[in-house]
Length: 268
Image 1 (cartoon, one colour):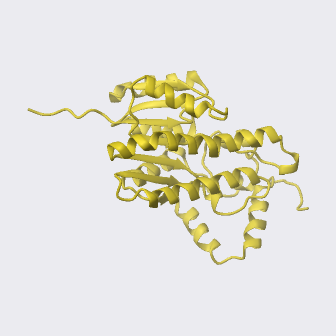
Image 2: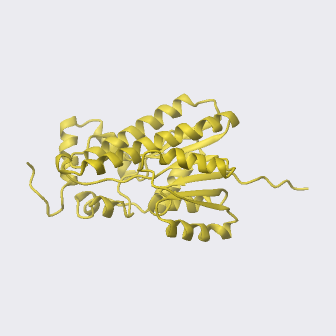
Image 3: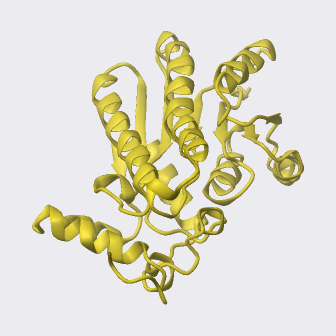
């Protein structure tokens, strides 16, 4: 007589598009899903799409850029009687332009979403994982987090936090049955570039742009293997390796050049 093992449940933030949606699609093959984003219609379409895989899917509409939203989400999940076995902190956004000219409120929302909400959700769901001695956390960082980013100063800084925080937690949690992996992609073909106003920058017009599905697959392979960090794409890995040997000022200047428009402004 065969024993049917209940599906584990994965919570994915920013699941309505891009890397988050692809991660949810892949996880739905053998997980139930809790999908979180601001846009109900995209989340409901995703929920309908994954039903043939046998996945149950709960939709939570939530703007994690709002203070208090992460705790509200956690309480809603608890009230629904759901146990989160896999937490995917994917939600985030960026903005292109000089910091002095940026909307300060928008920059603070970016920090709230990219840093504070990710940290809070990790802190809220982690104790339960530790008590059960099993669980996996995938944080979506970026290769942007490995150096400063002129013209995207706040975004690069938020990803530096995500990368560092995730790697530190990976070490802290060794031997607990819980693992943390940070996924650090380079440019990806998602709506991120449009939202950030980056479509015409050299990052997206001169470099290699990966598909969201490929990045998601790399992230889940690393998560399942319990790896600390994964950088999808051999060009991205080579770039990070070469950065070790370049002076810091040269790297910062190169990033600034890549952030400018292809037709772009001259260096100040």
